[in-house]
Length: 91
Image 1 (cartoon, rainbow, N blue to C red):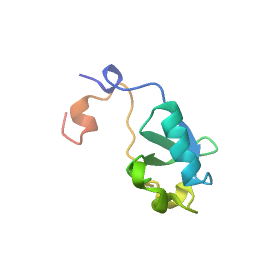
Image 2: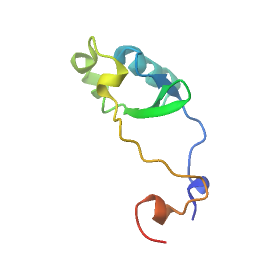
Image 3: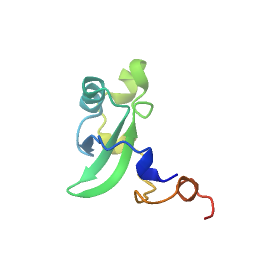
Image 4: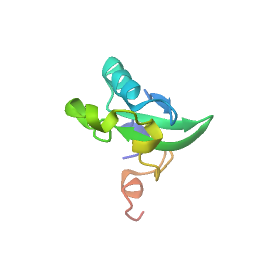
């Protein structure tokens, strides 16, 4: 099985300079649990609802930017990559 057989093509992006509270609102509005952090056309991180503290994370988000909370080490793969390869296995 390949990545393109299970991946979602609906991706929502955000800027690292966006405020975390705004990103949380955007996630809820668009019904997504992850935002891709972008700087112009380059992927610079991934932000999850957990990074934002979830429903009760107002104190985590208060006064912070997306860049403060997102994971900056992002693994990338292509759509034709096998799931085993994407998971870090061989072949």
